Every structure is written in C-alpha cells, then in structure tokens.
Length: 238
Image (tube, rainbow, N blue to C red; front, side, top):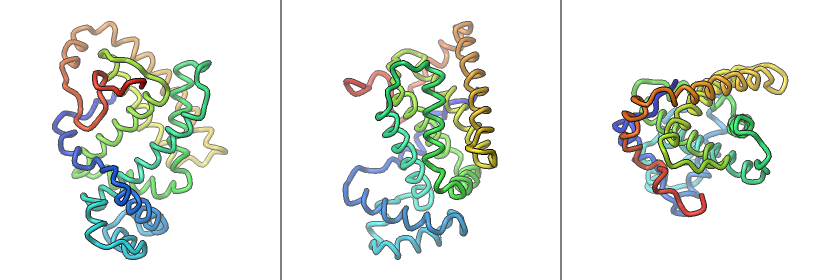
C-alpha cells in the first residue's frame, strides 16, 4: 500500500498552495496555456516558463507571484487544472446509484482523461516530479488528487478511514497513471482493465485494515498534512 506523505514532506510542499487572487489566477492560466504549447517538445524547463511569461505579456513580478516556486509551481498548476476538471465532471454526474468501486473508477478515468490533450506534457511532468528534489511536492500533489477524488464522489468519513481511503486511492491513481502514460490500446482499454484490477486489490486491502487495530492506533495519531482538507475541518455540507 502506498504511504501517505509524511508531515515533513507536506510542510515543505505547503508553500506551493496558490492564492485565489483573481489577477494571479488569470496570470497562471495564461502562462500555463502558453507553456503547454511548448512542453511536449521541449519539456518542463525554466526556459519554457520564461518564454511562456513573455508570450503571455505578463510582467515578471506578477509571474513570480503566480509561480513562487518556478517550474514546480507551473507543474502544480497543470495538475490542479486536471483536478478541477475532474471535480466539475463528477459534479455533473449522478453518482447515487453507483457502487463505490465504480465511483472511484470513474473519478480516476476522468482525472486521467483531463490530461489527454496534453498526455506528453503529463508524461514529461512525471519524469520531472520523480527527481529526488521533487519527491516531497509530488507526494503532496498525489495526496491532493486522492483527496479531491474522495470528496467529489461523496466521501463523508471523519474517522481513521479518512486517511486510509486516501492512501489506497493514491496508490490506485499513481499506478494507473503510469500505465496510461504509455497505453496504445483503443480508447485506453488496457489502462481501464488495469484500473479495475487495482481497485479490487485496494478494496481488499481496505478490508484488511480492520484486522490491524494496532496500526490504526498508530496512524490515527498522525496530525494530517497542512494545506489539505481534514475530516474535522470539513466545510458544512461537504
């Protein structure tokens, strides 16, 4: 089972959380759009970011505020956009009659398909995020995506399962995304078959947790990552 990001990792990554200033949001959108026209061929590089800023007619100080961590912030914006697309699609879908495994499957599919127009960019982002210096922020982003998936499909848990669910879905999403990046099958049928198998495995592991009370007691004291929604601080109605 994939581990949740440690508290130290999340503290290092918390500075990547963007503000909701409309001016900064508009700048991020323009710069990211410009960068995506180059990333597939040139990769996620500082030069690509610099050129995107110029092409977007965004002044340097504003760009620095929009992407305080430079390239890492740019890649983070790319993944946040995909998270938002998934959440929007799920909000428009009637999930009430769907089993939990089907909701998870749909959410993961929508999250990956949100990146389909820029699959090479997603592939190159995975390479950059796999570098040792970027592991912390990458794990934080993975946890954020898993968190978004559970909330979007209607999770209301406030107990220990809040964390185990996100750990399990993190593993499902991460492994499935690796398969999807290189899938050449029609309509990604190989990826979706793999996804179904991984969800089955994850749900079995979820059942095993109930047989490990000592582990639950240990992890239940984990304070949770900063900057990520926690069960006791959920907004009303979520």
